Length: 409
Ligand SMILES: Cc1ncc(COP(=O)(O)O)c(C=O)c1O
Image (tube, rainbow, N blue to C red; front, side, top):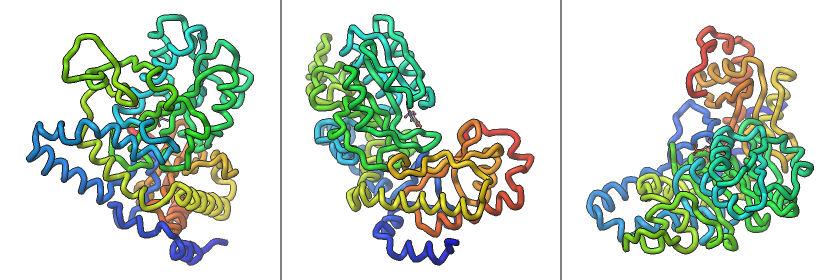
């Protein structure tokens, strides 16, 4: 049996322990939902205040000329190492669904003789909605086929233009093989687009080594950029200047302040900018990225696996047979969240939230627990499981109040 003292001993040896101080966490609460919305950090507050007081407050419109315009590409370069991209391959802008629209719309024009887009039937619904819309707008008949991702190989043929997959399944936390799948897709002559929403800042990624064509992600989950924070888009160097932005706007123009009526794309990632950058939101992300410069994705990964291993082991030890583990046990297939299935999953999560353990619920029966190594301690995992044990023992999860689901689960 693993004891709380065993967990405290792990915390004493934890090389990331000091980073917890950077975050605003509520005393008595255990936050296991950083896979949905990361917490506020001190440097976010500082950076936002600098922008408010110095740049917007005093600099006013002059600040556009002294750094604001370059923020989307500058922050892209800061974020690039987290996904294994090179400088000049990442842009921070818009939000994820919009970025997927840009990439799908552009990619479909690169394979004009192919008529199928493949995606995972278990993909996030927003990905599917926007891909359907972009397929309809492609100017030729395109079928979006939602498949069981395990059958991808047999679905690939010379009519497939593009494959889009979410690298970490938002429900189960399963991590897909970035390089293996990208290679398979390329072997069929198709293009590969990855949604990295649940991967970035959670698992080490190497888009360069995997030869990924395009990717996009969000920054409000493991990157802690704040609610509705801007997303990021990756376009491999060799596709820049070839892939067209289907949603062009003035700031993606080569000379926006010439106010020309004919569109001419800017060079590099700037071509994927459409509108004015959200400077305050970008400042928040800028601050949020500071903490990643004090560690490495490899260290984050090692602690993440130790945390999820501990959680899984404790749930098995203390609640045998109560939940069905849907997250893979194999490390190479596991990201940084653990999903437990239970018929009363919604009630379980609500009861836990009342007890200060914040996870979330995904339809139909999945309790999700995110483990962010930057601020979670091993004792937090122990205490969270203690509360799950209590919720099940007291049947708190069956409370009448949890019969009706709230709009946000
Ligand atoms: C896998 C995945 N894709 C897409 C989205 C949509 O992101 P956005 O609201 O930034 O468009 C989300 C949101 O959580 C997501 O988890």
